[in-house]
Image (tube, rainbow, N blue to C red; front, side, top):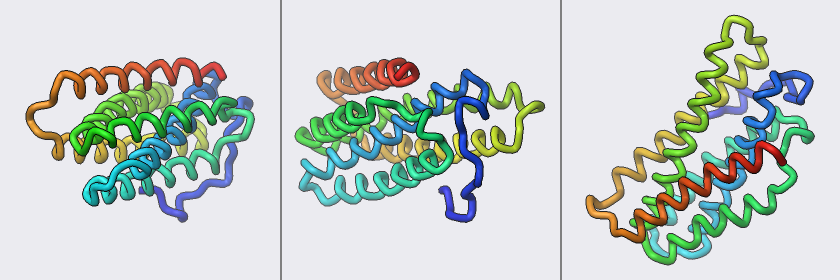
Length: 191
């Protein structure tokens, strides 16, 4: 978890990081924004106390991630279509919450499996360049690793709560969520 003691004084801009990293950090910021709204969507719909507690815990973590990215990213890096990610996130949480806990857990599993891989690609690229990383880039790598660790914990918790049998529509929804997450990243890298 990211503590207040870990706050850095640097700001990431398109002039301070490699050009490939700018769209990646934009997608991370937008993704954390969307994640917050996934949990807000779940909380707006569900009346199940177990799901509410699950969503509240995960929402708190995602808010810390977004705060961390907000602290380090120059406003010029952030996506200009964040309202779209808020809406998409809200719907991604609210729709499965209508259908119950298994749909919610499967949705979070699909989202977090994608996010785990997305962060891993960035971490691997930074590791490959580690010998020439500045202190600021080392800090970005550390932030990505910490966020990824939290997302893996969310993934594992979702998997543990899933029943063994997931129906066709729930599996289909999970594939759509994974596809939508990948498409969202491609778009937000540009805008």
